[in-house]
Amino acid sequence: MIATVAWLMMTTVFTVSKFNEKVWRAAMRVPVKRVSTYGEIARFLGTGAYRAVGAALSKNPYAPEVPCHRIVKSDGSLGGFSAGGGAARKKILLEKEGVAVDKDNMIVDFEKVFYPLAGADGKG
Image (cartoon, rainbow, N blue to C red):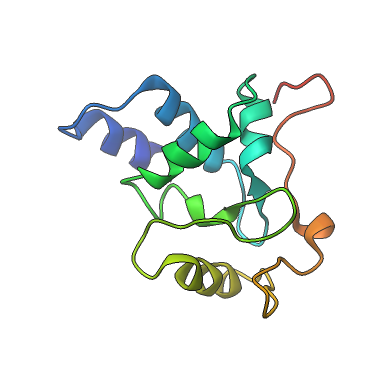
C-alpha cells in the first residue's frame, strides 16, 4: 500500500506541501482496528501544530489509502471528516474496520485502540 501511495504522490499533478505529505505518511502508520490522534501525529512530527495536522488531513486526496478516518481527537471523539458524509461517514468506516463508536461519536475503549506513533522521546 505504501508503494501505491508513493506512486500516487509522485504522479499527482497538484502541488503538495512537505508538511501535508509528512502528515499523510504518519496517518498511514495507523493500522486497521486502531486510531491515533491529531496531537499524536503532531508530536511524532516534532511540532505542537495539531490543528495544522487536521488541516492537512482535510486535504487528503488519497483516502482511503491514506486512512485519515483513523485520526481522532485526543478525548476519543471523532473530530472532523471532510469526505462526503462527514463524521457519520467516519464512524461507518471505523466500525467497518472493527473500531466501536458509541452514540455520542466517542471511540469505545479509546485507550485500548489508541495507536501511539511517538516514542517516549517524541520520535517514532
